[in-house]
Length: 218
Image (cartoon, rainbow, N blue to C red; front, side):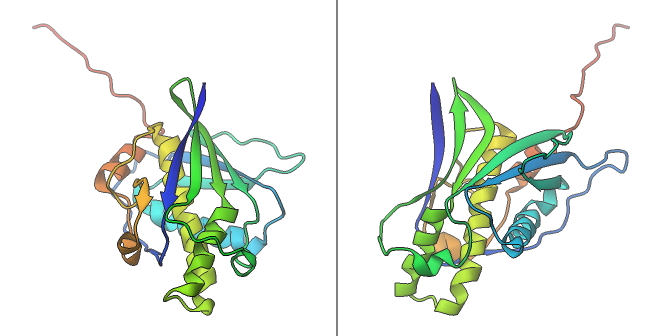
């Protein structure tokens, strides 16, 4: 059976901030995470670059080396400690905000991670059309039209980060932390989003050898 972990959000405004990198042993190279992007339509280079920067800023405390590539004909898969396929569904450009039909809703499903037979798969879907509609709703609230592209980018990055947490930690559960909430409320989005200390610690285990306990008799 295939199921989906869904993240729903009511959007007002949001921001992602840079954070200091947690200390890692000099003997350990940063674990590599391959993020393969697929798009329904060709995105602008500027959007992809900015999205990568926003997500990298949020994940910086983990020390993970996020390596992004757009899946195209002839693309050769890389070798990583962990890999995730990220499908960007719909029209993934900030201009979509101005063309979106107004359909105010209390909740919108913005992203989902695939589960099969109880196992979280490294397959993530981000619904760009729903993100555009959510941001478009803000035109009728306290957000000026010039700010909408930035809000669109930052919201998209936060949804990507949320789903990457599910996929990388192989955990379907939600938590009451900035990036693991199932439901975002306007008050949540007014502050800078950060990974929790626990999330950072779990992500830093990626690529590390499992510790083996040795029992000795004397």
